[in-house]
Image (cartoon, rainbow, N blue to C red; front, side):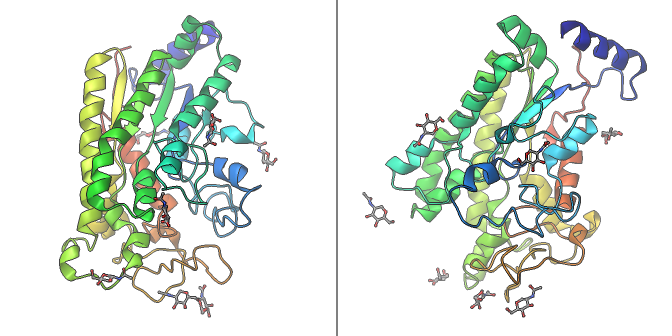
Length: 371
Ligand SMILES: *[C@@H]1O[C@H](CO)[C@@H](O)[C@H](O)[C@H]1NC(C)=O
Ligand SMILES: *[C@@H]1O[C@H](CO)[C@@H](O)[C@H](O)[C@H]1NC(C)=O
Ligand SMILES: *[C@@H]1O[C@H](CO)[C@@H](O)[C@H](O)[C@H]1NC(C)=O
Ligand SMILES: *[C@@H]1O[C@H](CO)[C@@H](O)[C@H](O)[C@H]1NC(C)=O
Ligand SMILES: *[C@@H]1O[C@H](CO)[C@@H](O)[C@H](O)[C@H]1NC(C)=O
Ligand SMILES: *[C@@H]1O[C@H](CO)[C@@H](O)[C@H](O)[C@H]1NC(C)=O
Ligand SMILES: *[C@@H]1O[C@H](CO)[C@@H](O)[C@H](O)[C@H]1NC(C)=O
C-alpha cells in the first residue's frame, strides 16, 4: 500500500494534468446529514418508516435517472468532489456492498451533531430522528478502519492522501430544538456545545491520521423555503429586504458559522501539520438568492422545483416532493432549491466548484500544498 501511494504521488508530480503541487486525493471519508447522505438514511429508515419519499421519483431524476437515497434531483457537493478527484462516487457505508478503499460516506439525512440521547433527555426527539448522529458516524468509521489499515503508522500513511469532510452538522440540531418548542434565544445557547462536538470529531480524526479536513458551516436557514412556507403572514420587517429570507433564522446560521470559523482556526493553530478547510454553504446560497441570473437560476430563487403548493415558495408542508400528485419542475437546472429543504444538483455543482477553487472555501481544496 505504501509503495502504491508513493508511486501515485510521483506520477502526479511529474506528469499530472493538475498543477504539480495541487493535492491528489486517493480517498474521501464523509460525515454529515442530508446535504451529504448518498443512501444511508434509506437503509436505516426503510424497516421503520413506511414512507420516506426520498427513495421515490422524482428524487434522482436528473443524473442517476432513479432515486439513490440522495435528497436531491441529482448529485451532491460530495459527488462533484469525488468526480473532480477521479474517484468513484463515495459509497454509503450502511449499504456494505462496495469496497471502501477509496472512501466511505457515513452521512445520514437528519443527522445531528449532538447525540440522540441529548434530544431524548431534553424531550426534543421526534419519530423522524434516527440514531445516526456524529458520534455514531465516528463509530462506524472506527468499525471500518481495521479493513483499511492496521497500525497507527499504516493508518497515518493511508489517510495522508484522504480528504475528510466533517459536516455540515448543526442545522438539524437547531431544527429539532425548534420543533421541540425551544425559542431562538434558547437555541443560541446550545450553539457552543454543537461547535465543540463538531471540533472534537475533527480533532479525533486528526489524531487518527487525517491530514486534510474540510469543516463546512451551515446553510442560511432563513432562506430555506420550507421555513419560509411555515408562516406566510409574518410582518414584512421579519424579512431581509434584499433577499426575502427570514432575518432571525439567518442570524442563527451566521452565529453558528462565525463560532465554527473561530473554533476551526484554533484547531488549525494546534495542528499546524494538518490542512483544515472552512467550507461554506451560507455564502453561495445567499449569492444564488441575491443574483440568481448570474448562476442561470430563475428570478424567484426561493421557489422550489419539486412541490405543488399555492404559496410563492411552492412548498406545502403536508404535501411534499414525491408524494402522489406532487411533481417537479420542467428544468431543475434553473432552480436553487429542490424540495423545500435540499438543493438541486445545479446549486450543489456551483458550491462544489467554489469549494475546489474558491471563493466558497478557505483555503480552497485545490489550493497548492507543500507536502
Ligand atoms: C477539477 O476542477 C478543476 C477546477 O475547476 C478543473 O480544472 C479540473 O479540470 C477538474 N478535474 C476533473 C477531473 O473534473
Ligand atoms: C448495493 O445493494 C443495493 C441493494 O441491496 C443495490 O440496489 C445497489 O445497487 C448495490 N450497490 C452496489 C454498488 O453494488
Ligand atoms: C415533552 O414534550 C411534550 C410535547 O411537546 C409535552 O407534552 C410534555 O409535557 C413534555 N414533557 C416534559 C417532561 O417536559
Ligand atoms: C445509538 O447507537 C449507538 C452506537 O450504535 C449506541 O451505543 C447507542 O446506545 C444508541 N443510542 C440510542 C439512544 O439508541
Ligand atoms: C404567523 O405570524 C404572525 C405574525 O408574527 C402570527 O401572528 C401568527 O400567529 C403566525 N401564525 C402561525 C400559524 O404561526
Ligand atoms: C396543501 O395541501 C393541502 C391538502 O391538499 C391543501 O388543503 C392546502 O391548501 C395546501 N396548501 C398550500 C399552501 O398549497
Ligand atoms: C397539483 O395539485 C393539483 C390539485 O391537487 C393537481 O390537480 C395537479 O395535478 C398537481 N400538479 C402537480 C404538478 O403536481
